[in-house]
Length: 267
Length: 349
Ligand SMILES: Nc1ncnc2c1ncn2[C@@H]1O[C@H](COP(=O)(O)OP(=O)(O)O)[C@@H](O)[C@H]1O
Ligand SMILES: Nc1ncnc2c1ncn2[C@@H]1O[C@H](COP(=O)(O)OP(=O)(O)O)[C@@H](O)[C@H]1O
Ligand SMILES: [Mg+2]
Ligand SMILES: [Mg+2]
Image (cartoon, rainbow over all chains, first blue to last red; front, side, top):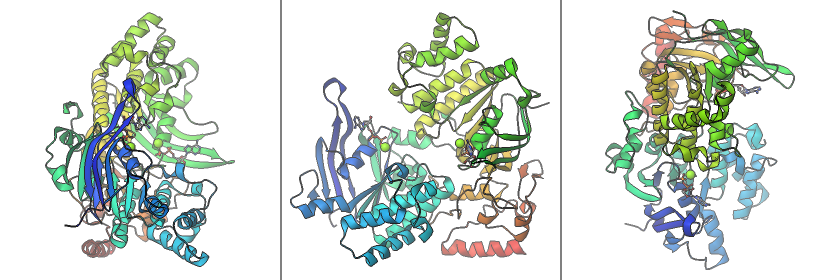
């Protein structure tokens, strides 16, 4: 078997010090295969976002290693080129794209700018790629020419995905990226993500508290609680036959016929 | 028996840049004392506006037609003391974003006792004791300490429980719950729902429960109404909603939602995006996104049609399509494309 694209080993993050010290991520290990899709579930505060932020380099781990193609990202990059590559090959999409979009910049210009950061392209080639990205995520010429405020929530999330894909990453992290979308739009975006995976071979690290969405998108899943991994395995196995009490609680908390929330004991 | 809440032919227009825009169209709903009515719809469908109209909290310049009756009285005729009593005693609201409805520089204790002191004219000491009792009632441990805390020191789930405690404090007869669990994760949602259900049973309150989650509505509401573009498109028993929907929109929502026990090859997404009442085309508002739409659907706004004892629908094709809406999907993979073609053909026959 070939080495995984991403291997996280004993990753730990503590915030604060002394009496106020909290461990946000505790000794977390997992692997993401090339072309794979790994889900991270867990209630809010379980350390999902902090894990993602360490992987993209926004947060420095307190311990452990992050191996991308075997290279440890917790160590300083050896060359300027290696540093640039680190900034390119893992991208992230958050829940609310509006806050991260420049309100005065047209969508197409925003995509062109990202392309300019990562690649040396002629003006024509840039234009061609912007159009290609628009096509990939379902944004037409008119939408590429508009400002963020003229777009709906679903369209803005398409922009955020296009912007992340402009860097041609090998891993796309989606942190609750579809959680706030209406059901009908969420289905469109989930189908889009599946098309992109087929077309581009990009791997997903998919963070969500929505188990049904995880089932639809992820081959494998890890369940986090209080910063630690409590269960991991193939998504179908984890959700159909959970071994850990917390995974069972998560599953039983999902509303359905005959649901009795009062019967759910919490440890 | 007359219902506790009766909304009839409600049409609401709001001023936007010098013109009136329709946000609710001819909405009817009925809620009996002690019951739970679900109000389901995607963003912009008019759920919050329905609640704000009932609570008489509409923006200035709103144009309202139709009736809202609470316990037989016209809510829009209430003035002075009667209006105050209605807003501060009969109906009470719980919002999605609990944090936005608290004051960050005031302690939870002040927040809770304020309503008791002003509405019930309770002395401060008594109000504090009552507040402690209220927090204990919603399962909050160490209530004395919580009263001294500020909103930012409480998690979202805890804060929402305090909000529920505050809204039941005045013993309202109707709770208007506007997506109270949307911002919470599943385990916290389950906790909040179980507390709301217990409070409701204890005090015999009616709840108008707003959510965009069909499964949640199905699990906790007696009847559910589905809104689309400011109109009621379906009403029936909640448990039937996802088994035997009465409107193509409801069916499409059921199918578009991924399932926890099954991975679909492709999700049957609904093309296009939800429309507001203001943007809705003539005829059936859902027709442009509906895979069952025919020319007749685009000609006139359908009226609500009773389907036996089961419920009502705003779809002229329903007598014909009833029971078959979930039989096929609109998904793009090959198998269902065939099915869809078949369905379309059958539909035009
Ligand atoms: N910058 C920070 N400083 C202090 N604590 C933090 C910081 N970021 C996150 N935390 C804490 O770490 C824990 C995990 O948070 P997070 O990773 O955001 O969880 P999740 O994404 O699963 O909701 C929480 O208790 C949170 O309060
Ligand atoms: N203050 C307002 N003025 C004008 N239009 C508004 C106002 N608030 C909401 N709307 C519009 O009313 C429609 C219904 O909104 P709302 O009831 O908030 O929808 P929902 O709660 O179902 O998401 C939307 O088209 C929205 O843009
Ligand atoms: Mg997070
Ligand atoms: Mg709303």
